[in-house]
Image 1 (tube, one colour):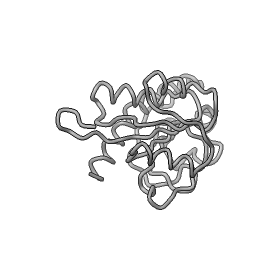
Image 2 (cartoon, helix red, strand yellow):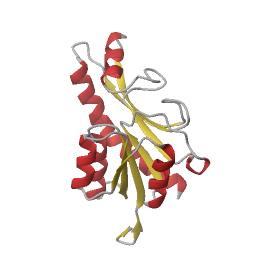
Image 3 (cartoon, one colour):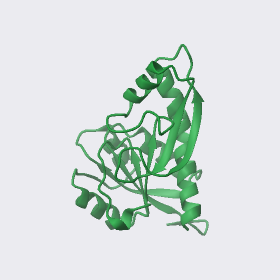
Amino acid sequence: MTVHGERRLRLGVLLSGGGRTLQNLLDRCGDGRLRAEVACVVADREGVMGIERAQRAGVPVTVTKDMGETFAWLERHGVELACLAGYLRLLKLPSSWRGRVLNIHPALLPKFGGKGMHGEHVHEAVIAANERESGCTVHVVDEEYDHGAMLLQARVPAREDDDVASLAARVFAAECAAYPAAIELWRVRRI
C-alpha cells in the first residue's frame, strides 16, 4: 500500500495475550507516525484480547501454534517484517525470515531476559535486584529467547518506591515509542 506516493512496510504481528502492543502499532500506523500497515496477526491461543483488537481493526487474524502455518500466513499476507508483541513461543525461523522478525522485551537486555522472563516476571526481577534503571530493548529475533542483535534500547528510571505496576507502566510507555522507532530503523536499513 502507498500513502501520498510512499510505500508502507507490511507488518505481521504475533501475540499471545491482550494485544496492547498491537494496538499501539495500529494507532501509529493509522495516524501516520509509523510508515507501515499491520497486514495480519497470528495468535498462539484462542480467546485473547489481541484477537478482538485485530478483528475490530479489520486485520486478518489466525490462531495457530504451528510454525509452518505461522510463516505461511505471514507470506500469504505479503508481510515484510514480523513483530513479536508479547508472543511467548520460541520461533524456529525459516532461512527466508532470518533478520525479518523483531521482538520488544521489557528490560535492558542482556539483563532480565531468557525463557520465562516476560511481563510481570521481568519487572519483579528488576525490583528485586534493586536496579536504578530499566527500560525496553528491541532486537532481531534469532533462535534463542531475548538474544538477537539489538536495534535500540529505551531507558526509564526504576524508583525506590516502584511496585510492579508502576514500573511496568513506565516501561510500557517507553515501549510505545521504541517499537515504532525500531521498525522505522529496520525499514530504512532494509529498503
